Length: 279
Image (cartoon, rainbow, N blue to C red; front, side):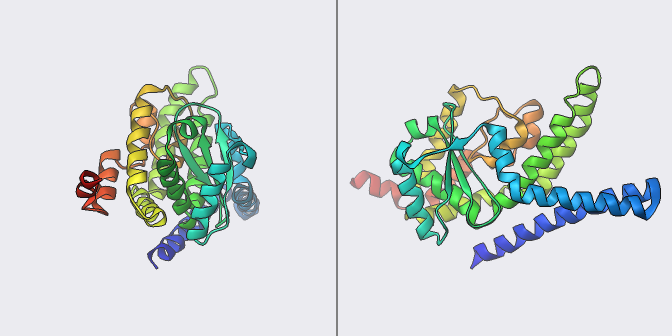
């Protein structure tokens, strides 16, 4: 199946990221003090990579202020996630909630048992069909192991951006250098095609592309009305880009335009206009 090839490619990209990081620190260590320092730096780089693999989802959830969503607080959301996970042959994802009012969602994790975070705004604004479409989209990211690469890219990029915030006159200079480097890493690891693939998979899981298409339109309109502040390095996580595409945030845009995603989703059911008129 196509998604298995996507899984293999994402795992390979994660391995290449670790290998490239180890090689970089190894070369730096060797140039400074020979193979002993190089060996130590490579060892520490592997420890950091292992920590990021096992605890990366917690780091990302902490960055955005998400907390676990109890079943009793949103039973319909848990039921929908469990049903869609069963169709996707995945374990039910852990569910988290974001306190803000901007409708948005994202997935985290490292393997088939990932987690999905939804905002209060999404729970309040999205009808059941649209919410299922968004959950299916995030489940597709989990199944394809996109979350493995997304989580790693966001952690590395956010760390570089935060490193620039040392204060004083150095902050602007460091941000001028490290911001594009962080954005380059994100774009090297994440292709906009992953969103198109997740959209197609979500349509298959839901049995219709229109719930997700309607949800994307709603999310885009809501983003124009609700102010949103967060690290721009977290852009790859969300179902759509919630940031204004200017300044530093403009460097991290990895999502295709909403209009193109909706067009492709509608094209999966070319007779949808006739069905709507008949209804």
